[in-house]
Length: 272
Length: 275
Image (cartoon, rainbow over all chains, first blue to last red; front, side, top):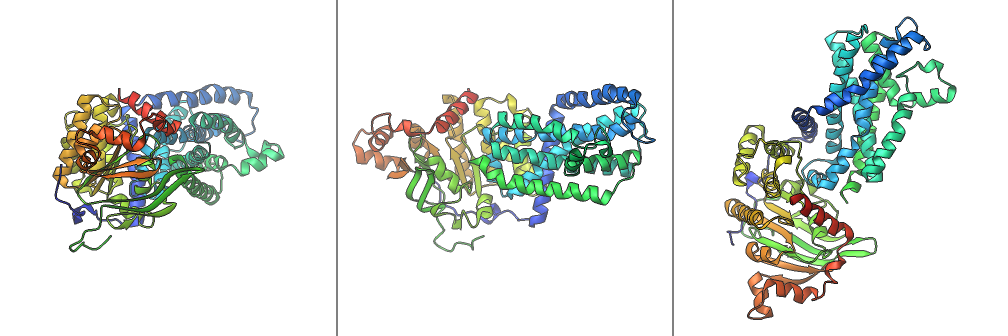
């Protein structure tokens, strides 16, 4: 079989959009792929919704009656709902690294790495795709909380800001997961570590109770935990609790960028 | 991007003095190789010969530890992004996303290669047609047979109209009918686009049918180079490519056992999933 030798004609050299545009295009592509996967299989949306509903219905309603947690004038269920949104997003994102290990085993990661995409664009794409998945969680919790009588805002701009906060939080925690994946390289190890750190991250935040009632050492941990700032921003937006939005958003953005950098640096380890 | 070649086009692939080491193991040892534009070139050798490592340097996954590798005149290390734009790559594993339809799988890679939006749907449909998956395009890829998956991967690799198509063990684990169908697509694509094809295989029949020239690698080194006909003639009047392979790699199976566990496991896993 023999053909006339050819050099790549100019049609093969695609127009190259500017680097920044390409970066956002990659993020958009991964978000779209995530939506397509969700469209084909919605079972995860249903199964993932069960746990936050149980937290709100059982834990939330019981602790509302005990009145053990001081939340000022805010009913405990109102106080808890934003914490459960953050928690359910955390649970989705913290195991997202498993997908990248699966893609490594299946050869998909190798193919992604030989597309004209910077490593960090691939990681950012994955991180925001995790965000897309957590948005559906947030919406479910908001609806359930509203049905339980929680007095939430319905200001569309604030709801939009809630989704931004959830996506930023998911971007950080999924990058944490991908970073661990790049270190341990195996699914079972990542599962173990994910399970080991999820609850400490959750309890060392203001998701369930105010930082003011924590022991000193836990206060320090909770201030270093991005989940605290996510919960704080969500409470401010959804139930009007006072918070420092500049600090909350800054921490979430810096954490997400740091996570993308860390996971990108380790991505090549997975391709070996 | 390089300037328009005047009379002497740059080689499609130019490997000089490439060595690559994993710890104490020298996977590729001072390899020199040139592939001409438009050629279908086969890298042959038993497991552990260094074929996949060579491909991984070529497709920018591993930076060269020593030596240089150029694709159409572009250095794979310093001009990696430009090189990637010219590549279509099908790895040894079955690398499709089963949770997406065939069309979505191809469209995903069209986006990652910046195929312009106005051309995208048409280009995706075109490559699905080439690999004969138009009717199955909107089914979930998880329902595809092994041969269909391989064809879908070819469509993914083709959607950016690559100048160099790199296939790592393209028919491992396929039944004879599916294998013939993959060979037919590769030949069809090469004739249609005149692209350069570089493939690795340890099926001699595959190399004999598809390749204009082959390089036989063993323990990281180049042992023989030429057209299948030349190599067979050199060995004797009735020699097959299989005989050439045995001649250069040793008759015993010991050579084949040099392939690492990971190598063998990867091949088996792909074969299992193909079944």
